[in-house]
Length: 221
Image 1 (spheres, one colour):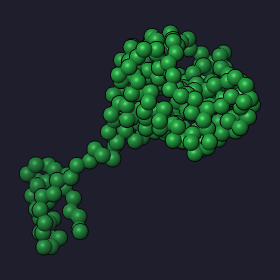
Image 2 (cartoon, one colour; image 1 turned 180 degrees about the vertical axis):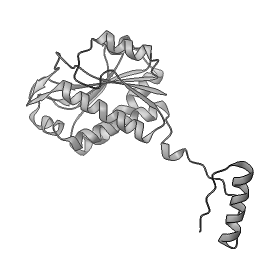
Image 3 (tube, helix red, strand yellow; image 1 turned 90 degrees about the vertical axis):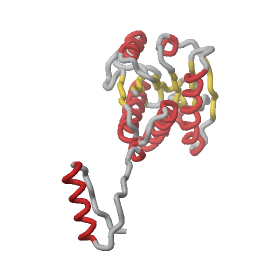
Image 4 (cartoon, one colour; image 1 turned 30 degrees about the horizontal axis):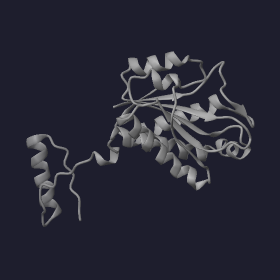
């Protein structure tokens, strides 16, 4: 399973600017943090359209994900309008249903769990004709994490702890949409017997090592 992570803007395109912040820098932080969490906690591969401050056209971003045959696509953005605008919202391409709608709902719900802890409003699950949603061939989602133009929300966007929580929520939502296995769940144990003494247990364990080459450990309970 390959998940494509797209940090909006970059390079000569700063994106939205406000309250001492650049959208391109926040989206990159969110994208990288999300990718790290996915790789650490789930069995999956992650690709970034950019992992540093470079400019990429919308078509280049889409082409990278399509060429790599990514299974899911998530594009990170930060909103800007005026000082009173607030909240979190997500977008999918108009008319898309099925896996795309499920992807949007799962990520949206997970991120709103974080937003609710900080009193950030839910602006809704929306549809819009955006290039990265229109041209991608896999289920695709675009998220707008609050408003850089809002001083109170900008304070949160300056917090690494807050960004970690938002990134983790994105990762969990993506993992649920992709039905990824938690790495801790992929461990299975074979109990070969119960013995009165540790010496007898070690003898049996050694026989199995010799016969089958198994990695056997004796544990006391």
